Length: 242
Image (cartoon, rainbow, N blue to C red):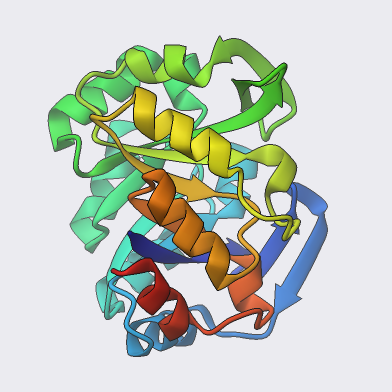
């Protein structure tokens, strides 16, 4: 299982949100480029970088910064935040980004996402589905987690047969250090074996990583626990086995 150390950017600064709330942000003093260098020194081969300003605005906000980071990063970047058009996505690939993450667009404009998958391939586009658990069913949320799509994770994922990567976030656990939803990840991995499932939300310790790997996760996004020193990245990579 690949460990993706996560870096969320707001106004060029490294932050972490609690359950996606922009009014509940913890700001860290790290320089983004220096943080990526430390990730690589610890043995990470990937990093997950989110332009929170772009995600909130629904259009490019810090894509200049993302492009600079990608050009100089000593590891592969998977980036997210405000990508809506083919030109925006292509620019990231031109800058050296390895994967681009597409979220709400998969629900709101599925044809546009299918076209991105056709143009760039399933290995370069990551579907990101944020879910609330309703009666045991993962329901996809959109608009910064403020709206329900009325569709299940499985229904949305089925619309993209060319996809190869799926990032699943349990909204109720994101940024809360409550532990990941192991049952959800295991069920998604079982029902969608064609997809490499990345787990996000709630990871609090290295034990969580071992459980996610056993549940079938191909990757784990590690954010707040890492930034707050709950464990060291090199230890997390060793436990995850990749």
